[in-house]
Length: 258
Length: 342
Image 1 (cartoon, each protein chain N blue to C red):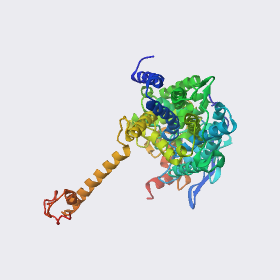
Image 2 (cartoon, chains in turn orange, yellow):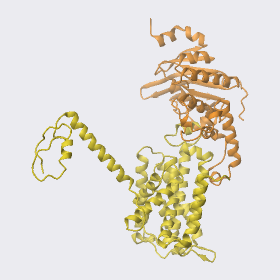
Image 3 (cartoon, rainbow over the protein chains, first blue to last red):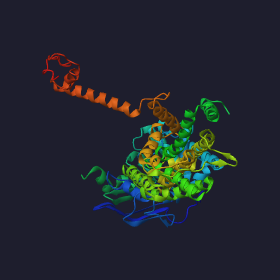
Image 4 (cartoon, rainbow over the protein chains, first blue to last red):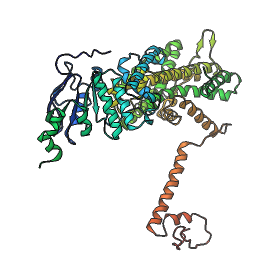
């Protein structure tokens, strides 16, 4: 198990992060931080730069300038697999599972970093001890997310809401300190959203820190501890959900000027 | 172990492999040997192309590396074939590492094109190097021997070929059902997901590429000692394309697929040569027929939509032999059309 005891200071700091695509500034010197054990929501209108920010943290895009510091180490512009090694798990907006593989195998893929078996050892079937441990861990994460009944089903046969949860279980299987969720409620029905919110609250109560990029206001307001609102690549506001709801600048960004 | 259909089929298959060289006629033994050899190469492609999604047309070149390494060393220096196997594997691994490092970062159409390029280059190299015998090749390669037992004829080498083919099958199956195997499956369709799981995608692609190349090399080594002669032809780009077809048509995603297809392929070839074997209809032809029928239907539909009689549907009717020049009514519009052109 990774050492999860909270250190001093925030878990992740985004410091003046900037991303330019040619002349377009997608993220403009954005700064915020994520504290241990909280659910932070990153919201904003379409094109505000939320997904780009998400990609900058997860390593899918490299920074033009600025810094992302995770547990005291700079992870900006590191490739995604190194970011994952440091203890950041993520899910995808468009579910990326291997549909023909069972839920168990998909989640076991998430535990990749916790094993050591290489190609030669695997080909000669000398990995059974580790493999049994990996599968047990995957099964445990599937139980934790409430999908125990579907452990041996093909991932592609599940409903979208369940596939999203499989992605969360897969991210949990690598024992992350921070969980990045990219629009987890997109395309879900009301009940599925409620189930998802319940799961995320449970994870939080178990000490997980979560960054949530989301469109769905109802979902975000009831779930998050704090919110960062973005517009045009910049931070528009930051604070408690109740404060954000009454913030005039945020209201204008979402509803237009009066 | 519970006896299921699949275990039953496996046992039956093993029995056939064990008994065939004793009882089968010469033709089937030769056929079986080649099926074994090609299976080994196609297995690598199943992993590389079918599972990891990296298309390679150049696998035959790696077969050539294995074959030429042993052919040259055994004929020129009298090295033991068991030693040249490892020399071949080392050379192939080095070449595959280099080629993989350069080409595997390409995506879309560029990767298959690059594999065609080095596939052609390597096979031309075999034909143009003097010490490898040029296009004439190298002959009088010694037979393999295990202790006092010389694997001189095709019935004797059968067991070695199939032992290696089945071992490769076992290893590949194991690999797919493991930690690196799951990572290999996740490579298909972009590296985003794999890398988010902590997989170093670029590195893993090269590892799979080398694995496939090494299997091809082993097949080449066996081939050289089965034929006792090598020239560049069986390692050309045409062979590379055939290997890919074996893997793809047999079911590139499944480890058992490539043997099914290899068998069907060979049966088809034998059938074409007038030998007693069932020749399945080539898949390409099937699709051509379907495409043609679809085109006919589309043309007829267009004609009906435009409401003019002398279009495709009428032309189709005029295909009938007509002795006298007469006017045919359009099949769809029932109106008389232009005079028959025949």
